[in-house]
Length: 245
Length: 303
Image 1 (cartoon, rainbow over the protein chains, first blue to last red):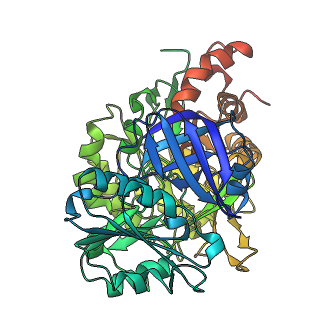
Image 2: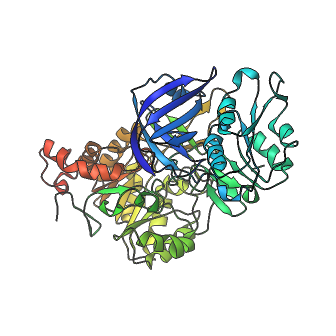
Image 3: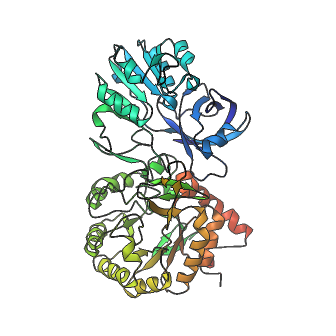
């Protein structure tokens, strides 16, 4: 974990509510895809945890959706402004279990952390398939970015306005994969848990106090004991997940 | 003896800064980012007789200048704290730690304190009779002077270490409770624990926190802390450890002027993980600005 100041180099909308922010700073503590950062914002007490989309050569890329005061404030910031950020938080995805043909499944703002994962898996010579799930055509982002990395990309929309009509699980059935990685809303994660043919890793979300394991604000029960989503997660393996209900 | 040192129940602290229980785990998360030996001491995560998961999530809510938590005393239980957490802590902290203890019956408090009494690493027992987040325990002992005194007496009977009773601000007359604890043998009083609070999400129209209510902390509660520390310090003859919304060297000095011998820093650790180190570094400069030679001289200075 590291606390440092980042300078915004660009901040622009990708859709009506989703923004991409690039920042310059010390990214040396970001060691794994699937980790997150925790951002201090003026006038707000708690930091805001946002997943890392990419981190390379001193540039941190975040893709976030405006859902409340914090993300709204972020969306109004411009290049040159600075943010106090805690980096290197969370465990991240374990790439060693991927096999030859890993499948990545992202839903909505669960898509961004899969980008750096995809990049790393392709660099290791894996044949990566990616399914990106959205509600409707206007909400789609990052499709071209994953294609540019060399992944085979499928897009699903719930209303059928683009790509495959339905959910990411509808596309998942048709794909041959050795292992999967996913991030997205909990109903999607639960559906994948049920229909998946292999083992895999799930990235979870929870309201956090600190983001680095001190406050026990985001604890969950797992097969292997109590875990803190922020410190022992956010990524949990399929074998250790106990759904809350 | 340095300019910052204070004496807490017979043990000298290099400085009065103590990260508060529940905001500092068992220390080692913070030892990753700074040398925690710079602290006066710290109060470890509230420990109970048996292991506890605590409350369902969400447990955290944002507030203006503060936050609400309803963690519910998640901890591995006193046996594991002694067998696993204290040995890990020993590797990164050379000083005596303050052991924070909670319970659901007077016998629980005595059981846990008796175990911790045997641990050389433990310098003080901070007995929490004020947790707002567990039902049928915790705060119920701290809202009744007689019950608080019974817990105090039961704990004093099983330990030779200084016993500091941590009080709840969610009471009509905190002075009466502090005095009863003093009469029952308490070596110190710490206050304030969190204020009972609640938030409702306008989108879902439901409470933000699964437990509905929780403990409100953060800079917003600082004036309440100053007032209660002042009232209690003027009514008892044992040291008072002040806390509640402290986030700067100025806040530390203000609470000490109100009567605090040492000062705990809570929620601020969660936002600025290096805040305690930074406050310790800032203190000499801020003391200079206000013409303070030694911190121990200003305790209770505001009359």
